[in-house]
Image (cartoon, rainbow, N blue to C red; front, side, top):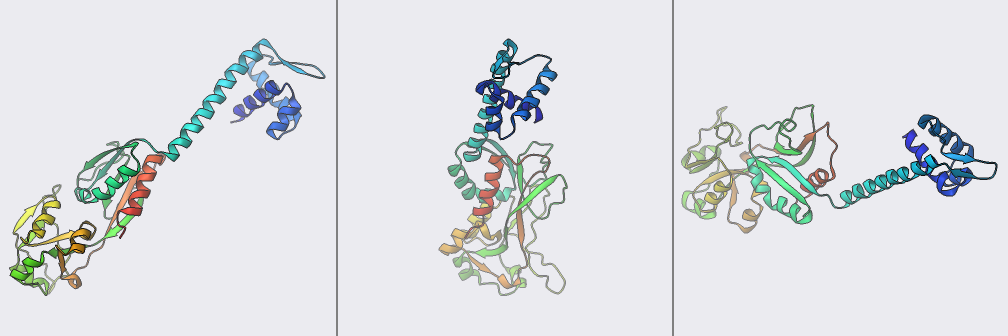
Length: 294
């Protein structure tokens, strides 16, 4: 930066043909300009100006150097302008890993794409624990607590798992009033693709035992569970943020709310060693603002 300051002092002096005027433009004394140029000449090993008591003029070496310095400052100005434009309209490829349940976030993701058409999203949906840094992701969205000192995190919002079914299903099969009643119902269950294990329904334990639920269907993605529940085929345990439309329209209703204990958190994670790029910053801000908005 000291070298850049000396170059700026040289360009100002060369263009104004005056140490005094250069100092005035830069807010320093004429002697400071003279000393900066003297240090620059000493470092370069050439004389840049012919000096007299009244004027300064460029030497041939000084004229050559001035053209190069002008190009340097033009490049700096162009870089600053480009960065400013990037801040105003982020662009480029953004690689993000999302959980399989992230498919239910697509309305928010689609709204982001419409708001930032110059950003190319490269989305990878998986429940496995990806290595953000080694696999080259700009960021990941995950639920639960994350313990990795290499990562920065921001909370996108919280959600609850709820039990839902279609009104006509409950009209036919009855509405469960306590967790034990689920044993006589068609339970639509989710299996984690990464582990092969069934997702536990967040029911408070009855008599210190965890209920073993019957399975009418088991699937490894959530969208079929929503569809089957709406079709009146059984009861499903699903995240509340994915069911706003169905609950508002009455195609699904909740049961056993007072017997559930669950709160999950979605976080955006990115490598702490990397600068938070404008494109990632706007994605994080947008998801945090809109993902769980009412």
